[in-house]
Amino acid sequence: MHTFIVFLIKSGMFCDKKFKLSDAKTGFNYVICDFCADDLADKRLVDLGFTKGAKIRVVGKSFADQTFAVSLRNSVICIRKNQADKIVIKSI
Image 1: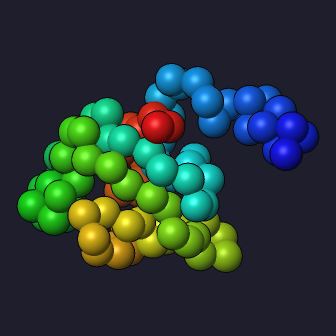
Image 2 (image 1 turned 60 degrees about the horizontal axis):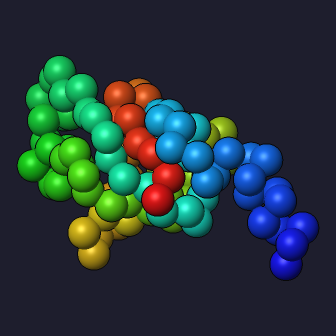
């Protein structure tokens, strides 16, 4: 148990560091801090609930980390890496 906690602290999961959704680890909970929606596909993600303060969880990633399955507001949504790069999150 203590080894697992030390691992989480060293991996940065307990700090308020902000990072891109594409850098998130599978199975952890996060909060969206910022989202730069600059084209029509990104604005559709805002319509689906990718807004500041929303709680999300990365459910899975593709083999080459090009697509991400994200649990958001009782739904699982798949997004591309270029969209995940525009979403800034932090651990909760």
